[in-house]
Structures are given as C-alpha cells and as structure tokens.
Image 1: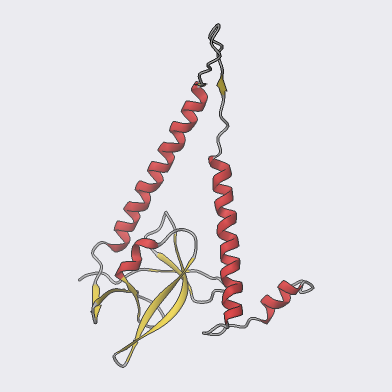
Image 2 (image 1 turned 180 degrees about the vertical axis):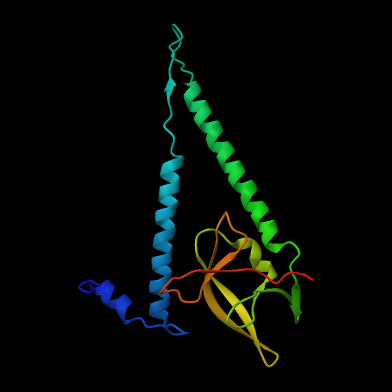
Amino acid sequence: MNTESTEDLYIANITKHETYSNEEKKFILKKLNDERLQQQKAKEASLNLTKQYSTEDKGASSTSTKQYSQKYKDDVLNHLNKERLWLQKREEMQKKRLANKKIYTFGEKEYYKFVNMEREYYLEKESCGKFYSRPSIVTLYYRTFGEMKKKDVLLKIVSYSEKIFISYDAIRVYFKPYSFEENR
C-alpha cells in the first residue's frame, strides 16, 4: 500500500472501532459525498443528450422554430422508457423486500428484524423506503435487557436482489446480504 500522501496516512491511522471522532466522521462523510457526486456527474453526463435542431427562416420574419430530428425524439423516448422501467422494477423489488415480513413493536415504533446476523438487529419501518443503490449510513437497533441500543452501518440495495446489503464497517466496506424475518 502506498502511504506517502497525507490522506493515505490518515486512512491508515483510522482503526476499526465502534465510535469515531468528529474529524473521522467528517472524513468518512466527505469520502461518501465525493463518491455520490461522482456517480451523479456520471449519470448527468449519460443523460445529457445532444440536441439537434434546425432553424428555418420564414421569409421576411426573423422567427425561428425548433424542429427536433426523429433520432433525437427516439433517444428521448427510449431514455424516458428506461427510467420508467427502472422505477417500476425498483418499486417491485421494494414490495418484495417488505411483503409478508414480521413487524415488531417496541414502544411506539415498528421494526423489521434481520435474520442470520451476528445478533438480533432491527430496522425502523419508517426508514425502509429511503434506500438506494448508493451506500448510506443507517441506524440499526438491537435489544439488551429490554433496552434498545443503536449501531450505525452502511446499507445499500441492489436492483436485482431482494436482499439488503449491510457493511458493519464504514472504512473496510464489505457488504453481506441479509433479509427480514418472514411472517409465519
């Protein structure tokens, strides 16, 4: 590993632990934000279709009208159709992830329980609709003697899977697939 730059040294000095200093949190959030901005720029670049239009002079008047080529119209329609299909598939997968799952109530809040995790982790029902393919920091809850404690993890979803991918560590990102407990 090349540790000559100060940023690499800083990353190497952050060890695996449960709580991070404010400086480490800012660094992690900055890195995640930079990745998000890169993905957003790439998406905008792919959406940036070239506009082809021709202007027509109408004799004495200097008005011009835009006429889009058939290729441009087809590109726009194809893009809109792909976006619609992507949203439709995302909604279907979201329904599959949450359909027929057991809901636990602790206090006034409702939770879904993950299965096959190192301990019994719960996720708030309200936060389930806010997941995207981009990793985000989410709070999971676990019970200890009747008390709910929190743990922040990285969470993302993948469009082709019903599973939810979780990484316990924000520095060493390794996502493992988990699902919610089924209703019996």
